[in-house]
Amino acid sequence: MNRNLIALALLGAAACGKKAPTGASIATGDVVIDNAFAFEPITAASGAAYFTVHNHGAAADTILEASSPVTKAASFHGSNMGHLMALEIPAGGSVELKPGGTHLMLTDFSPPPVAGDSLTLSLKFAHAGTVTLKVPVRRYGE
Image 1 (cartoon, rainbow, N blue to C red):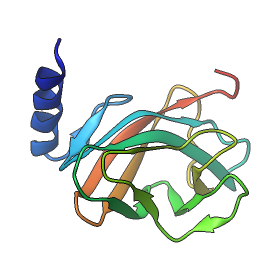
Image 2 (image 1 turned 90 degrees about the vertical axis):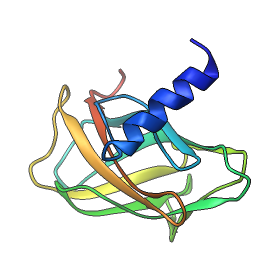
Image 3 (image 1 turned 135 degrees about the horizontal axis):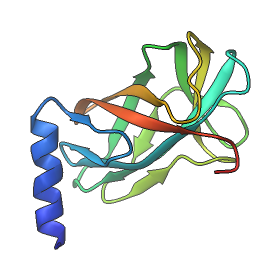
Image 4 (image 1 turned 45 degrees about the vertical axis):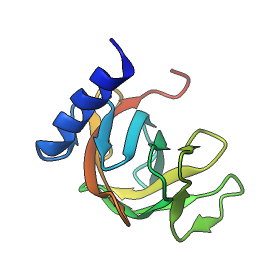
């Protein structure tokens, strides 16, 4: 399948409510999010989600906020665990959230997800709008 057909399929999914099935890529505006997953939290106090954001646009975009219906808070943290107020995605670039690096910290789960579940996340972009995705939950080490 060529890149144009994939982009059209992703844009079609985005136009229909901007929701992606579990583990799938999703596009909104010039932004594509893929490789999303979360580890099963060890306690209900905190966990993390990871994904890659690609910006195919000519201008930078920024994730202004993140949320999940099963957590009290969601915030971006850098590799040094410091809180980030927002997450900029450079024009024509990508940002990878990964274990040991930048990640989306999720706190106070109710109820905590378990491996095999999916976790709903909403990301609000400055330009691309809000996107909701289902993130597969894995056991540590998977």
